[in-house]
Image (cartoon, rainbow, N blue to C red; front, side):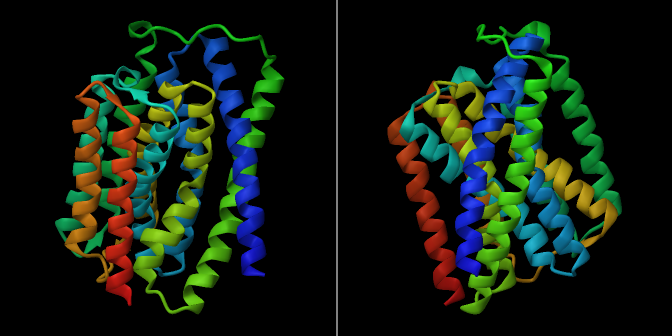
Length: 306
């Protein structure tokens, strides 16, 4: 049954990702928004919904390893795995994301690590601080319309059809992510993997598959800015919105299984992305390098849990 849930979940994620990309591109054209803004706000928030639901459920269930591991592991996977795959498919130009997008990735990463290093608990005060930063981020993103070039024209799509694509895509992604996480978590627990490792790997990758589907489809459709904007926006949302909202509702103990290597991997992935973007683009070689680093991290986790 667990294997069947994983297979069905993957299918729903792929279908939902296609619908979300189509609706997002059409919305950007209709509203004359720059592609990076749609990727960061519409798709970034939308594809982070599975992480939000998963972390909230884990926090209420008293599983802090899954709640926090999901957020941190998703950010690592978004950059090293998902953006790596997208770059191997089609090189991603650095100018698809402005300096402010990159700065917000750094700010969110530092804030997320800080609230976990300062004490044994990510409490309501820390959650509210993260949510306040999210409000500033959203305000800045939505205020950028006049400062960037809008997306090119595509065939017109009616408002109802756009809403159907976006909402239907999101609903399909959420259902697919739930099935995938439930099935994969059942398989992982059956072979004795710790809760924190499950959060950092199985659950994190499972809830990040909407970003994977969306970014890969966007890359194949030649919308590199949408793929990069989706990853940057998702990583900011994961920390400011998901960790912030979860902690504001249910204070989360920092799990003892979370090591400095895991925190260093979060910071290192963000730093690596910013360094590569400074070179002008994320080429296929850099994408392959991202995948190799991710494989090494997963290998380290596997050895540690053996």
